[in-house]
Image 1 (cartoon, rainbow over the protein chains, first blue to last red):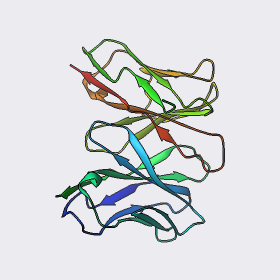
Image 2: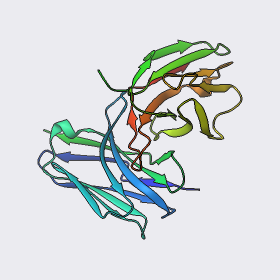
Image 3: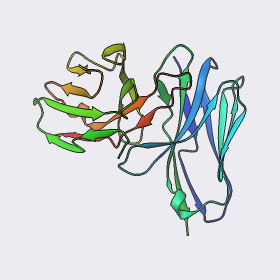
Image 4: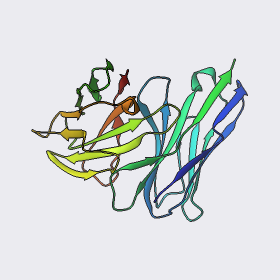
Length: 112
Length: 114
């Protein structure tokens, strides 16, 4: 059974810092990996999707990397801003399935 | 608004009552998914449809839960004889039938069972 773990569970940083969120998964037979953002009490917003054949994806200040063989992904946020405060969720789609398996998320607070 | 919509956004009910939630996917999306999210956890997969066919169900979907997508457009999720443990956010997502299969999520329905 696929298990997804995110470390740390919570993170508080001052504005302007660069930061890294970690995601690990137990079964490397994945089709793709997706990073989402969730604001309190809201739905999920897709940030980046990395196919299993890719190593990284970039969107603005966000960069996500994937090392499928070691079962790891990182989300790098450059020059953090208070508006980045949210919970960040990592999810994998296993080969042959449509469902996503999520981690528990990293709750990020960026202090002004 | 062309995103995924869900109704109601909030539902408070008493234990033992039945509740029904609705999800309207993005119009051209053939696949529709239901997830459940409890406080402090990531979403957990419940079921998914391709058009009107329900193709996968999680073991989390007990016999008190039923989902339908009768015309391949909107979907409903019904919970019968609700229990306090059913209190959660119920999220709907939709996607195209393509190789990437990016899922787009709605705002969710928060259920509180008293």
